[in-house]
Image (cartoon, rainbow, N blue to C red; front, top):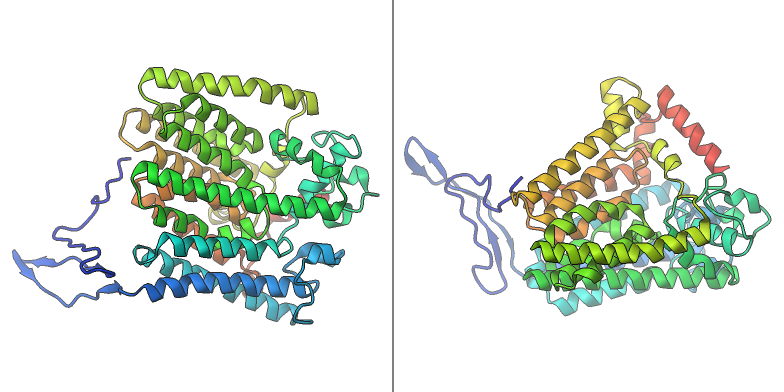
Length: 499
């Protein structure tokens, strides 16, 4: 799976980048006909002024401001927990600043969908203009987005309150969150703000233990501490993306912008205050430490990432293979083993031998997950158990193949890890839009142009399928990805876990 940038180019292709200062030019290939060179008019895509890039970043920041202003104005579908309660500490300091702005649910659905599409287009323009933007400008825009979203309540889903619910279950009510459910403490004031009432915690032990002190704080204080920590972890993660790009000799402007300006990262990951950044921070630290030759620390850092969220175990074989020669590999494995001992000890001390509840999430469906769509196309009603088993087998085969290619030095290890992570995302029955964030830094730092294109295609797919207006349009067309017997059974199972 070697992926050279020139691979697949037509004969006679010409590409010039930066032919004059401040100009990017991409020329289409010349066409040969009957042995002669036939010159035909070719459209030329030019990004010749920094103003285009500045405008794109401005749209991203302004889009965040608009979402936050509407989200803080009053209860709405933008903030699902607001249907239960919307006190000032939850709404944030901008609550009611511009009065009551919430339009009808339909108008809000269309408006939010249009805004996410506009931010996606701005993301594309920003990437096309990245060579004309200074690192300082990018950093200012990234920090501005983080500050604005810190003032927002969690957007779209209630995961932040689930984190706090499990923390309070363990620290305050002394119930093991891996063997008990949030519904066991219905008297807790956080109960109405959570969603997974009848599901033991699926979150990693390191993350769960780190949130335990928050369970002892007053709910408003815990809420703001966790939000602030999430924003700081996100900035730390992006700083490590910048550092890794420098270590690899790549342009850090592109790497940072590829991740930080992605609309799914902005609206769903950061705006929803999801815990993936706490996993990605030590994972990127492991990559950076490996590139620095600090192999033991790299192995330890990856084990911390795995303990936060098991997803990052996919990186393990690729980091092991990247640690060359064998003596470096031995040091890396030693660091991983030494870190595993205290992490395992802390897990057993905190939770016994109970494990995070990954089984429930692996069997429930979202409408636009690849297994569900594949099952519908195959005529088996969606993500049936047999389809999910095939997806799991395909994932194992794909990862094994990628590891073999990297081991034979036929593929670069960062790209191999990125493709493996993308294969994981495609195999999941429970697909959430922010899962593509797992792929973005690997695509940005790796050498595979195809992986970057695949990550962008996945971004567009997830933006379009998770927009609120998509459900409205499909309903008008009498299309329901969850309308089969398999889909109805999965929906009923999800409701049982929530209620």
